[in-house]
Image 1 (cartoon, helix red, strand yellow):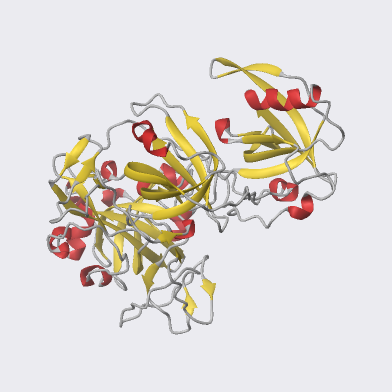
Image 2 (image 1 turned 180 degrees about the vertical axis):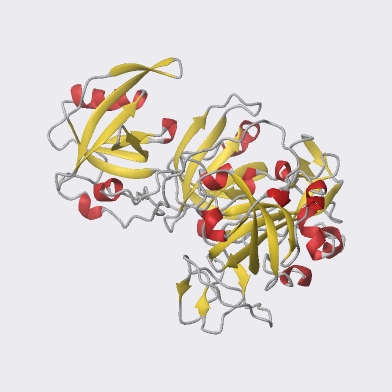
Amino acid sequence: MSMITSDRVSFLNYVKPFKTTWKVEVKVLHSWTQHSNYAGGDSLQFILADKTGVKIHCTCKRLFIARVKKLQIGAWRFIENFSVSPAGGKYRPTSHEYKMSIISNSNVTESSLKNDDIYLSLTTFPEIMNGTLDSNFLIDVIGQPIDIGDIQVVPVHGKETKKLELTLRDTEDQQIACCLWGRFAEQLLYAYNVGKMNENFLCLLRFAKINVYKGQVQITNAFDISIVVINPPGFDVQDYLRQMPNNELPLTIGCREIVKPKGNKRQPDKWSLYPEKTILDIIMATEIDKCIVKATVYAIDTDWAWYYFGCVKCHYKKVTNITNKDLIPVKHMWHCDTCNQSVTNVAPKFKLHLLIKDNTGESKVLLLDTIAEPILGVSAEVLLDVSLEEVEDPEDLPNAITDLIGKTFKFGVYVDKENVDYGSHIFNVGKNWSANEIISESDDENTEDTLTNIVSSDRSSGQVSFFSIESEDNTCLSSTPLSKRKVDNEIEDLSSTSKKHCSKIIKVEKGVVE
């Protein structure tokens, strides 16, 4: 089957979820196998970097492993056709907002680019110790191992595992505890005992985890994601601190406790019983919750496509476009993972990402088809006028969608585990009402089980590109690019904890390598 190809090569900073026909030029920094007991089985994981130094996590299911045979560590490669989804979880190897996934028509080819840079993002000891870093992000750290203990064998999940405790010291004599597990413990102890290291013995931990054990901050390996390098090339005790770049990891917002929902079957949500809350309330929530939020739509998040194609047979589960556009006439074809076959019977469905605000802050909400269509008054199929093409320009929105900007609604919001535990800034909406509508018990009876249809991989956080309203005082609601589209009736400029002031609105072009 011929591949969908693109002559344009994009930087990793600019890949977004709205399409799958991206083409990037990247270096493979690291790879590992992630074991799983689920039906999909083990998967291959990669950390990739482009020539600007931006890194991204890439995952490949066992089904598509044949497509990534050319992704060898240290090699530069072109990758075409892949999906992009939000990065999340407690072990994020890069600070990129999104991650890549290899799909059925992904294509890996060789690149002539030569560059030996390993793209370190070293973190200093004070940054680790002062608690300002988000521990969900893995870090690179280097130091001199001292106080190396003996290998201990301890039970972990019913399996005996080797453990080694030591201390890392920098040239300012600042020290931090370190705990290595399994083969990483063996590797360091072997290098120390057998290699007879001198006093300049250095240890570089890449993609390491910041952990707190018995009240003490420590560094540990993050399963097989991490790398331990003894005496890495280009470093010595005297000068390695001078080579540390500025750290780019996000700041933590605070510790949050995981609250697990009880039961497996979701009952219809009784929205009339749930309290009204502000955007600040849901952002700072420490428990899974449901509530009503009254807020104004100030922009459309165009990092995302406003629709997706779903397989009609599988109740509109998302499909991957595998159309061969070299054939004339073009016959549209998709691959459905649920059916595990090629399909042609698909239909477009809404997936709207709205940026909202009230007088306490700003956030993002996701409206799927059954929630979005009533407030738009038209179906996605009608707006597309039977077109079967993927989104190419995410800022080319129908008027029915841009007309939402400036309007105020009451949203029935789910505050989920991804929001509470992982800091996701997108909140799913289960129902919505006009701003002044009184929510009654009749709304409870008509509520569909919306949340069960929402896939967690549709979540995201971080910077976005969007259509926005420019306030009279030229205050930017975000530091990210704004579209030139605006509405005539501007809404009141509301304060926000994340608002940044700038002298003018700047439009930044998408990054494309010529």
